[in-house]
Length: 205
Image (cartoon, rainbow, N blue to C red; front, side, top):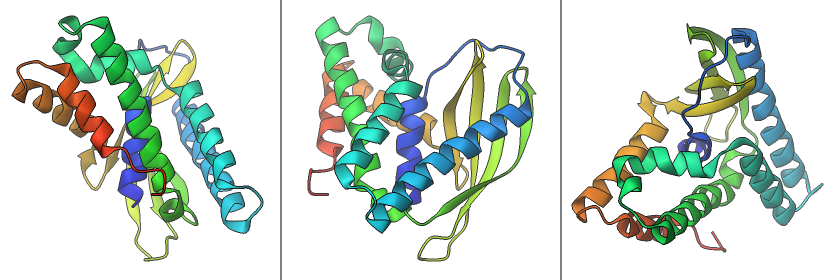
């Protein structure tokens, strides 16, 4: 479903950053539209047989690596627990976190294909901090979704840090779930690592 795709996108790009002041709302809107167009183009090529699934997977992995700071993402998601976890535990969590997010992307490619995203406007919260509004439409079920993107400027580089779908900020929700699992296991980060591994879609998904 589209919600799963956007959840994955939000997770992989969730990173608090220092704000710059040179980027405009138009830049933020163009960033969201351009990223969406690249994804849509890739999926269209997959559906038409111009490219294959392994190629699409590789492109998405490259995109995630280019846009996301996994260490920073993991630190935010883990909150205070990152200070008590061992380096081995942190590394295991980061690996599981990346694999889970990419796995959701891969397993949901077919449901996202054929849809369109159109940016409809934006709000400037602070210099370098924007909410970009968009709508996703054109899927096989005919439904339309309003999607809001939190976009930040870090030293002139734009990144999405959260996505709101159906009134829910997805990355924040995932963070709360992970922290709850760790809390229920007396601060054991490996419990969250196991949860993420169990949620990874299978290779044949």
